[in-house]
Image 1 (cartoon, rainbow, N blue to C red):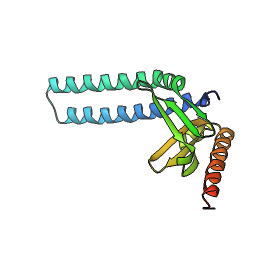
Image 2 (tube, helix red, strand yellow):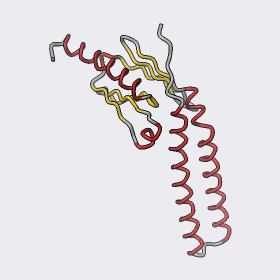
Image 3 (cartoon, helix red, strand yellow):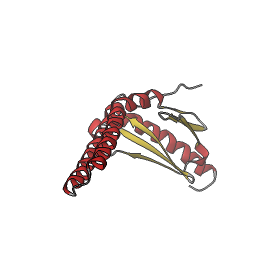
Image 4 (cartoon, rainbow, N blue to C red):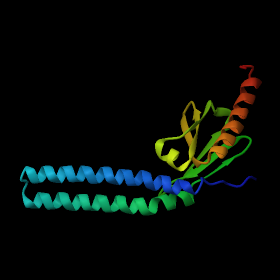
Length: 163
């Protein structure tokens, strides 16, 4: 049996950057809300509750920024065999996706701005029931996976006489 493979280690940095951006957005939103409350001269009790709530949310997001990418990396793995692709991921709830190659309809390699910064890619596998992703891959690995899966897709279509 083939062994599981993991995303590139750079994925941790990309996931952290993504969470840092979310944290900055939350800080700005919390600041605007609190400033609005100050301008509206909301009573002190309500203002303290809002500040405490914002502090808890920001503390949780900061903890997520530091801890979650490491946990996610430890959980994240994938395996590609002749008849299926298996993806295991999650933080609190571990999800195991088993994708039969016979059900695949389209294979796409994509790269967003954060992944571009770290030279990482995602292979997206489309089925009639939805899409699945293998994330945090190097360019070479993503091309190898996509080529292998596309070859399986082509074989299936040729066997059916579609192409």
